[in-house]
View 1: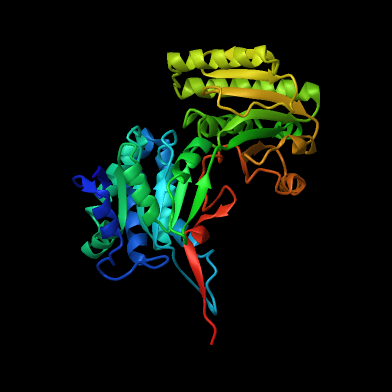
View 2: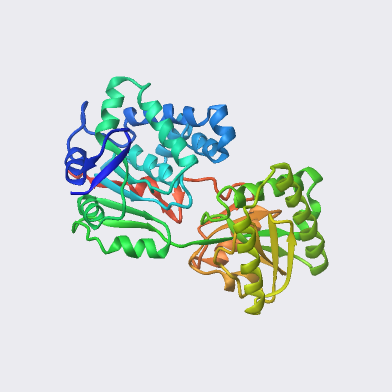
Length: 414
């Protein structure tokens, strides 16, 4: 039997069969329910750990996570669940989460929402996860040691985060035991996990390869104050560089919407501001990454996709597209952005694919963005957010209302 390392609650190794058996037991104090006060209390304590100044300074992305998990935000999210009259809402049961290794805090959002829906959870934490993920696990275990015993007992009985090497035995057993399997990562990860059968009643919730881009209004940029332009560059930095541009919601291209001369001037000023943010943040590009960016950029030029390349130090590379309609969506290296101009947002509609997830925007009105969303009409794009909010997680993600996905409805009629 393959042993798993239990990261939370911190413990010695455990066999997969024993883990599944324990997670199927009713916890002390009774079954969890949607919005269970014990889970809310624990997650609130955990959020305070993440918002501690020392942790937030070291890992800014954890401050965003801590804000998302504050008690007021939890109450707001739970209030969106419609349970009235003859419709009752219950947990799904056991949820098996497989998050990606390259964005090593996404598992917390997925796990927290599932726990708030009253589920028992087992999360596979990659052995390659480090830094922020380790800080998260430390904060979880610290919070568990500080809550009331009744809360701690319920959490210990129902929530597990484990690490194990690739194992058909373990992944197969956890998949078969799950009422819902949540797979984050690339298309390959989804395909690999789907080879393990689920119980007949169970299903997958998948988050496969996605791509995102940014749009900036030339007129909106021209109207903006110097402070607003600087804030846009800082927001774009947060969207793009926190996870080395590898997050599915990080922009990989920038479209300037407006006249040609205005787009050229605005783009040049924006990149200068972004370079100054990189300097102020003391951003360091590893040598291997600097080489990767150049290889990708010159490769795109050889393929005829790019007509001009501009490197501003090792931190920023801009690839001027030959044709905006031929948009490279793959990751080209941290700080590498395709760049193009279009006359209107409508010009982007034929370019959008179903795999396009987030559009980060600057300078547009709500009416303009709403009209764009209606034109897309489901072709692609699940989120349109301001610069600086691309990585801000929401209970609605990739078009899924996650709290609803993590719970089930029962109707009662007399």
